[in-house]
Amino acid sequence: MVILTGYQEAVNKLANAEVAFVGRLTSVTPSLSICSTPPVNHYTLKFENELRPLKGSIATIYEFHYEQKMSEEQILNISDTLDITHNRKAPQPGQLYVAILHADNNTIETLIAIEEHDVPLLQTSTK
Image (cartoon, rainbow, N blue to C red; front, side, top):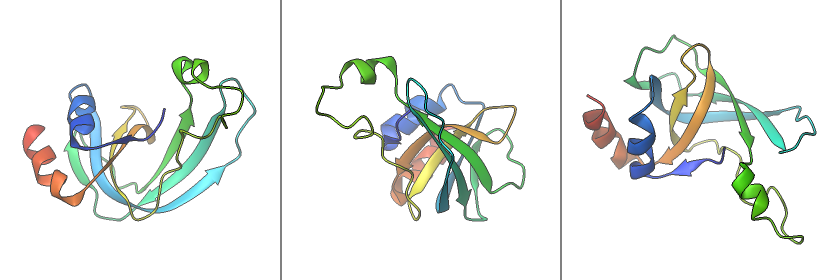
């Protein structure tokens, strides 16, 4: 999954989310990536201690697992000259994200980059 961007993407994804929060990323640690088809990048992401819950309840965990893999559609759109990692940007420290979690663990299912002015709108739209 690529990192999504913007308020509208966040609203669309939050509609089906069970557990989600807003947080500023402080650290990104790439983990060992296994050669697979499609390629998968693994990360450990640390957020600031002030996570803002949007849906569900969040334990006092600030470190989460995240993996990026290309969809079949993305793979089919790659030309022979295009680097397969071209459209997969790594999560960036300092960026504010909506993180949608798998309901049963501390793995991030979807990351959406947002701006600070989007937060009050998101908090209102999820109530």
